[in-house]
Length: 399
Image 1: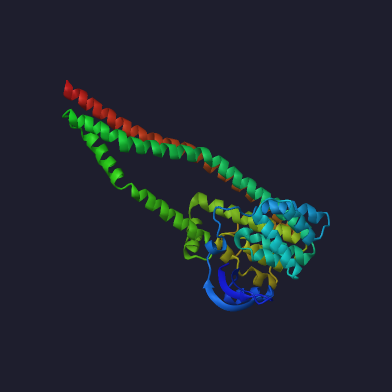
Image 2: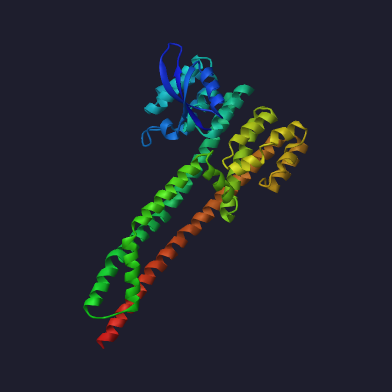
């Protein structure tokens, strides 16, 4: 959700500026009023950089926070006291401040889900929705336990991707640096030596022309890197135009399409299974689960799901209208509806697509490493071959 900046006054009359999330300005104003704040002036839309001022400073570890909070809740310790124990046992000042803010909000009579939703990007998008469902169903410890398992599995997947990418990335960077040294240092000296000997070689002329281009326009590399960084930043903005274009185009790229589909479908099914297992109504389940979808195109394709369910349609029938929902998921849902075990089928679908996603990532990474080695080998080998041809020309001229 976008951020909105207000000048507000609290109960003591203290005036300050505050950033708050909301669907629109009116929704943001209502959120301020629920916090007991009086909006004095609207200062325009804020930015994520304003909300997260410390880019390289300590940040909240949501997984560790949840992992430490869940056992206390399962031991029937009151939420406010459990938060206090979590805050006292940490050395991270960001976590301590977060816990302090959450406890202050609870003392004001507000719900934990509302407090989390206002924390911006400190918590994942699905976090507040699942906590809210747990509060409404009276099963907050159980829902939080399911959420902890989900977050731990997500962290393991990210760690696997990062660790598997380190070696290919190292090879890629090392190869590019080596190629740059050859083209920028060795080739010019080699060409100068040939020219001093009065030997002309078309292969050497080609290498020198390529070397001069690289030495003259090296700054283009940084411009391209900056553009890529800007595009990535815009893609992270869920409401940006670039993000919508990206979400639409990525579903047309063969391998990337499957990866995006597996990720979003497994996330959708896992969230719905957690909610339904803890007694949340189907309409509320669908509304909350729709928010966890990261691809905006897929999210729009099922935006009318709640309305179709109100008209009496089955979940499998309503989901079938989206072109992005796999047939396997629809068939398993239909079986679950007939047997009264929808949440079990949803969990199996989530397990299936999570396994497919991990397998696809492994295959992509296994292909990426040899591809990088082959490309760099061809590049360096071509340069060495051209230099060898120039040496042969030099020997022929000497003979």
